[in-house]
Amino acid sequence: MLAQALDGEYALVIDARSPREFSEDHLPNAINLPVVDDDEYAEVGTMHRESTHRAYLIGVSYALKNIAHSIDALVARHPKDARMLVYCFRGGKRSKLWFDALATIGYRVERLPGGWKAYRTWVREELTQMPGRLTYHVLCGPTGCGKTRLLDALAAAGAQVLDLEAMANHRGSLIGAIPGVAQPTQKWFDSLLLQKLRRFDPAQPVWVESESKKIGAIQLPLALMEAIRGARVFNVEAPMPERVQLWRQDYSHFERDPDALMDRLQHLRPLIGGEEYAHWQDLVNQRHMPKLFERLMQAHYDPAYARSIGRNFPQCGQSPTLHLERLDPQALAEVATRLHRGQTI
Image 1: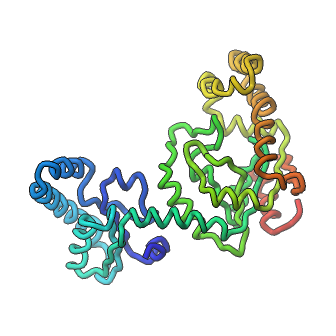
Image 2: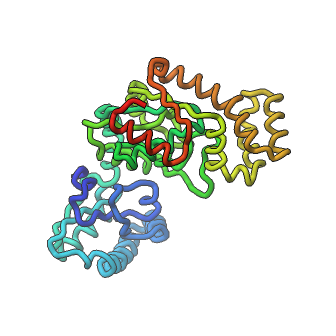
Image 3: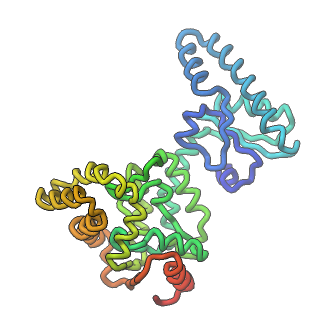
């Protein structure tokens, strides 16, 4: 039933939980038609501690009004033979209210046994198995060398691509937070990841870039990390001027507010020492941001990346190298096309 739901075999998948529960995680193709909203859910919960009977009276009253509104606004658009799936937290009263209403109308409706909790258990179990069923090609290379942009070009060329940083809404380093964009919850990331993995063809490689165990606050599944670290590797190199230009584009917010960058970098001071940190601060004070970006890569990010790659991808030393002389879209598209066709660069 879960696989059918994720594969789009239901005309409508209804999550009957509150909006707050839905925002934390849900089946990727579900819509939230809550039996009670967040405030109503809290009110019913409070009342339940005082009087179970009164709580049910209030809860069912809210539920019937909300269900009626959703039927008029959305459900009625579907033909009478539409197949639908409903679920709530554990597959209990909230999904039953929706089930009874839809069944009475005549729709082919099913309830998800165990509700969202059963789905969450299934996701965790699948993420221990699914990553190992795929073959990966891993782009390794220092920060700013164009790995993420090459992934985008590979996707445009028709390759299977797993862009973990895009899914995590984070560029994967201390300064990798994207302004104004929150990271997903861990549970929602897991749901998105599993949905993405399920859509890949196991007969074709999946392109991905080397990652640490965490991307911002998001933890990557152990099985995925093991599969990636044992995969075929492509070393990516780019000239420093191209890397600096890429940083100026990706981290333009720090060019506009270099003091915010230093607020982040102060956490590195114990690692790089006071003298190096003072040099960074001097470049910020002079607003020499291109020079600062180059210095950050040379003094910290490149050595740190080399150490990490040495530990986690020892096969890099015997792997082919992609020399990217330019990181503009046209140049990357040409490289991606050749890689996707299996040609030597």
